[in-house]
Length: 276
Length: 285
Image (tube, chains in turn purple, blue):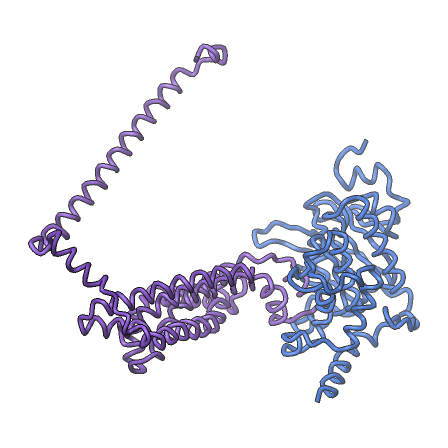
C-alpha cells in the first residue's frame, strides 16, 4: 500500500511523532471513560443502594402497586373538564402576558438596539437569566404567597417564567437582523421608533410568533403542575386525588394531562407551520 | 376627526414639497433654483475608524442641480463610505457637507432626520422590507413625515397612496403592487427601491452600487431608469458604481476615488486608459 506513495518523499520522523501522539490521545480517552464509569458506580452506591428500602421491593409488591393505578376511575372524568379548560386558559393567558412583558426585555437585551448601550443591555440580560433560572414551581410558590391560592398565581408564575425564553430568542433574532432595511429606514428620515417598527420588527416577527407558540405548548405542560403549589388547574385535581389516595383517580388525571399535552403539541406544531 | 388628521398630515409634508420647484408627480414643473448654486458641497471630508485607519482623507467636490455624478474606484477606496457621509449614515470625523446651503454635520438627530427626508437613497441590496407588500415598501419613503402612531398603523394619507401608485406605474410595477416584496425578481426589487426614493420627492439622490446584485442586461435597464427619472424629476444624482462602462455611458461627470483620495474629477470624455490606470493603480491593457 504505502509503496504507492514511496516516491512522495519520506516524512518518517513526522509519521512516527503523529502515531505516538495518536496513541497518547487514545490512552487519555480510555482513562476518561474509566473515570466516568467510576463516578456513576460511586453515585449509585452512595445514593441509591444505601438509601432504598430493598425489602419493600418485590415483584409481587411492585405489580400490586402498579395495578392500583391501572384501576382507571372514570367517575371523576366529568369533573376534570373544568380543570382542563382552566389549565388551557392559564397557559394561554400566561403565554400572552409573558410575550407582552418579553418585548421590553428583548429591547433592552439586544445589544444592537439597547437604548442606553452597555448598561441597559446587561440589565436586560440579567432579567432574562432571572426569569429562566428560577423554576416555575418556585415562581408559583412566590406568587401564591403574594396573591393567594388560585389560577392568578399560576398565570403570573408561568408568565414570568416565559419572559426569559421569549425575550432571549427575540433579542438574539434582533441581533442577527439584516442591517439593510434598517439603513434604508434611517435614510428616508425615519425616527428610532419607526426604524424599529419597519427595519427590525418585520424581520423578527416569524421568530417571535414561532417561539410564542412553542412557549404556549411548554406552558400547557407547566400549568398541569402549577396546581401542586395550589395554583389551580389539572395539577390541583391531581393533588386532590393524591391526598385522598385514590390511585385510579390519579391515573385518570395523568391520562387527561397526557391527552392535553399531546393536543398542545399537535396544535402548536400546526400553528407554527401555518405562521412561518 | 379624520379630516383634521388628514389636514395635519398634509401640512406636515408641505415643507418637503413646497421648497422644490418641480413636483415629481404633479407635473407642475416650477422654476428651478438658480442654476449655478450646487445642491451638494463636500469640503475636505474625512472619515476615520476608531482604530485610527483613515477611510477618506480629505475629499472635496460639488454636485450641481441636475448633475449625474458617478464615483468610481477600486474596492475599499471609500466610495460607499463617501456616499453615506452625505446623509450621515456614516459619521464623518471632519470636513464640511452642505446640502442646499445647509451645513449637515453640526445638525442634531432630529434636524438631520428632517434633512434626510429630502435625500433619496437607492441601495446595492435594495434593502426592502421583505414581509411588506410592494406598495407598503414604497410608502415607507414617507415615514419621515409621519407621527409614531400613524406609522404604527401604516395610516398613510390618501395623497401618499396616490403618489405610490403613480410611481409604481412609472417604474412598471403597478401589477405587482400587492405582492410581497420578496416575491419579486432582483430588477423588480431595485425598481421598488427607486420608487421608494422618489416618493420622498428628493432634492438629491444617493445611489450605492445599484447594479452589483443584478445581471448585465438588468443593470443597464436599471441605470437607464435612474438616468431617465433623474432628468424627468430634475434631481441631481451621486452614484457609486464599480462598472466603469456603465458610469461612462450614463453619467455626466466622473469622480475617481483611490484609497480615500480623489484621483480624478471630470467628464466621461476625459477618461482614458491612463486615467483608469491611475485610479485603479494598475496597468489597464
